[in-house]
Structures are given as structure tokens and as C-alpha cells.
Length: 128
Image (cartoon, rainbow, N blue to C red; front, side, top):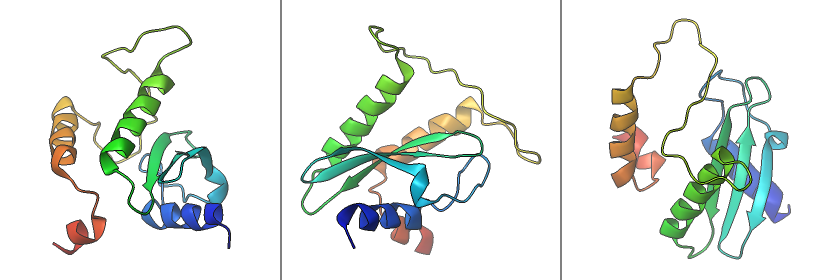
């Protein structure tokens, strides 16, 4: 099995479904953006609602901080058009899922604070 198939399978094991519409992801939904020796960056796009997620796969002894910065750069580039400067406000329209409450500013702040200290270990998070 080649490395791209293996990496995509790992990503699919951790990101089974779209968090917006719950569509199940498939390997075709993942596009490899860049491949470096110790880190790959990928785009996972939902074919139903078109929600996009940037993913960094840190390989071997890669630097997780470098992956975090790469994802931040990708997110900023996705928001900007050519020649534009980064905006401090991101406005998007997402489809409403029946039976769900809209995400509030407080929810965003809570998630930001959680992610500041989250080490990426989902197994430990789920088992606690």
C-alpha cells in the first residue's frame, strides 16, 4: 500500500463524517496539498455541503507546532483573494441543520480556549 493511501486512511479513521451535515467522508474527498518529509497538508471537502477542513499529518519526528502554523497559513490563504491582506473577521454562510442550535460567539471562544491546550490525543480525550 502506498503512503498516500495509508495517510488518507488514517485521516478517514479520525474524520469519519462532516461535522456540518454528517456526510461520510471517502478517500476521494481528500486532496493532498503538499508533501514534505515530515508533514503532509490536505484538504478534506464534503461533497454534500462543501464544508472544508484543512488537515496536517505529522510524520515521524515532525514538529506539531510547524503543522499548526501551516494550517493557519492555509486557512488565511483560503479566506484571502489574490493580492489581498488577511482579514481579522471571517464571515461564512453555512447550511442550518434541523434540530441544532446555531454556533454562538461563546461557543467559538470556548473551542479556541480548548484547542490552545489540546495536544491532539483524541484517544485520551475520548477515554476520559
